[in-house]
Length: 393
Ligand SMILES: Cc1cc2nc3c(=O)[nH]c(=O)nc-3n(C[C@H](O)[C@H](O)[C@H](O)COP(=O)(O)OP(=O)(O)OC[C@H]3O[C@@H](n4cnc5c(N)ncnc54)[C@H](O)[C@@H]3O)c2cc1C
Image (cartoon, rainbow, N blue to C red; front, top):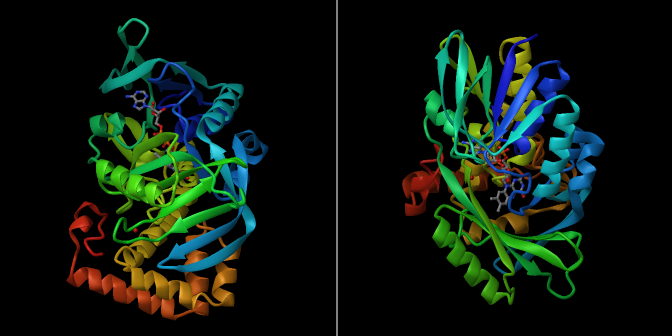
């Protein structure tokens, strides 16, 4: 029980992992390169699973609730009224809440500490960490390391994991158009611009974020600017970063000497490849990593996450090649029962969504298969940066 854990990265996945391990009685230290807990603002939308995982601690981060999704494609519109509202959260508030909970459980959070490297020495892992206050680096000895340092994880690189593929998420804060209810999120499918989608997510009665996922950062930004200009949105400020594209399950543990190194969150690629959302799956990964550390090996929670990410990958493979006509067909095929399925099950239950949709509208399956095969025959240039989806989400 006295074995010490060092976590690199004090963001969503790292702080939640720290909290779980501290609560179990481990000594945990978190090393974060930023000097404060005020990361750049980022408006995020998550399912109500956030409440199930964090409990009331999630409440302080919630800035809005979404009850309706409006889907647009080629002049068509479909409305989905969620049974359990989605939550719009502000990342800075979430991080503050997680940091307070981790500290209250006994975690020591060290800000202004950049992880540079590590080596096995004297039966322990010596982490080389640089202090931003004076640029001096020191060695910190721990038994186990968890890399929660994001998409371009240095822990992963030093421990020998291969680099991850990633996509660019870019969004701009805008004033909401007249008449748009703040509890409604809009989604546009425009496959000529992106194999993913555009969104407008209100984060207050007057403002929201418009964004898209693209494979190339500058091209995504140009597409977003064109999209906003066409619809009269004036960008107030931009938020952007690269997020991993899940293409297959990668074991989250490696050995250095006789010590363990784990990855969690974006560093481990625990991101839904359908929507490129990583908050809830990152928390699930945190549960899985904590379980593996405490029990001496991966358990049920990591296997469940692996299955879930696999279903997202399957769905993405089906829809990644969708043309405008495919999306129009989806909207046309959305009968009452299929719509109810989308209202009842969330994107954090992909197995249930897929099963019920195929049961109630088998033509979705045919449509997906046809688009998948089309991509196999005629892969598009943009697919090169894609997951094991050499086909054409
Ligand atoms: C514009 C945008 C919108 C998004 N919208 C959504 C959304 O609506 N829903 C959703 O679920 N997800 C969304 N995401 C994705 C989501 O933000 C990420 O999946 C999530 O933040 C990942 O959390 P993490 O803790 O794994 O990593 P990160 O948040 O990337 O944190 C990594 C931490 O490690 C620190 N660090 C890095 N290197 C070092 C080092 N060498 N030493 C010490 N510390 C280090 C960093 O400073 C940082 O604090 C969005 C992303 C973007 C960019």
